[in-house]
Structures are given as C-alpha cells and as structure tokens.
Image 1 (cartoon, one colour):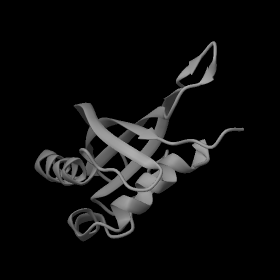
Image 2 (cartoon, one colour):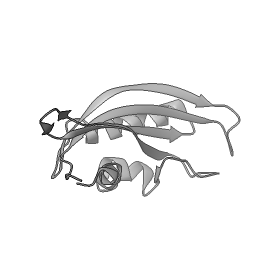
Image 3 (cartoon, helix red, strand yellow):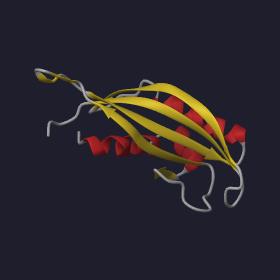
Length: 134
C-alpha cells in the first residue's frame, strides 16, 4: 500500500459502513470541513507515520496516526457519531490495513462558527499498514 493511500482507505471503509454512512451519508472530508457544512459530518487527516526501520532495513509495517473529527450541531450528536466511528475502526483490519486501534479522544467547541456553533469530538487511531517499499 502506498503511504498516501492509508487515510483514503480509512475514508472508504467508513463510507461503506452502514452505522457511519447512515449518520453522515458521504460527508467525510479530508483535512477541512467545508464552509456552511451540512451536519453531522466527519473530517480526517494523517497526523504522523512511524516506520519500523532498523540498521538491517525495514522490519515491518508502518503505524499511521489518523485523526477523525466528528462534527455536529450539538454535543450529543457529535458523541453519537464519534461512537459510531469508534465501533467501525476499533480493531478493524482488512487487506494491507493490518489493524486499527483507538488511541484517545477529546471534545471541542467552535464558538461563532458559520452558520452556527459547532461541536466536535476529535479521536486518534493508530492504523498499522503494510507499506510497499519505495
């Protein structure tokens, strides 16, 4: 798997899962929530990549920290969406994605956001993936 494809693969998996797509439809965005978004929605981004290199070379799969933000018009809806995402991603693995594990979350409030105030649960997942050698 190409390293740049990991976040896209996570996005496709979320879109294909009824528990998440029932809440957001196709509103899963990379990096930035659009202006005047229809809610609830998700954004996701790759935060970091840790390789498993040693002096003898690459020793295995890479770990990617993927941040998934659940956006909603009220805190309960943001928490419901975050729980649906966690249920889908926790311990998920398929193909080159060997495993995803939950690594913590936090709550945010976006005062004065357009068109209204936004609530967000930001969660981190460590996604272990088999990466093709460069």
